[in-house]
Image (cartoon, rainbow, N blue to C red; front, side):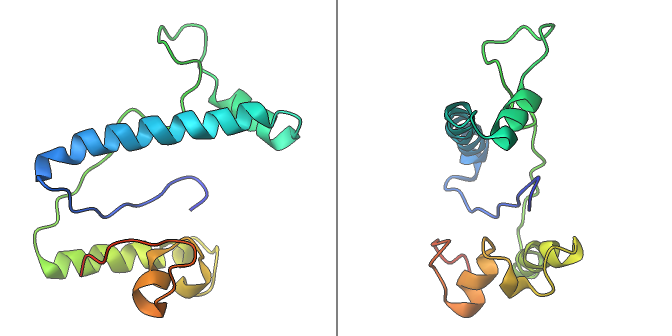
Length: 127
């Protein structure tokens, strides 16, 4: 998705989810912001970097914020709910009108699960 992503994980132990999400957001934000900063000769990168800049009233170490401070975890305990969430994730680009079928969205795990295509995303199977 252009402005968000869905992540279905099974951390061990389950309490590790918070730490995992903190580290994922930290590392990805650092890398994305660094790439944008190095690419300011491109107007789209320069514009995006400016949009991520925190206002001077924010008293925080970082100068930019990529992710929202919070995320909304949803615990999945049954196979039925797992499949429901996976189906929702796979069909989200279709519902948003970005593609006409889930297999057309290259960054979806749909391609991994149903087409055995790990060329863009390789992951461990959860089911």
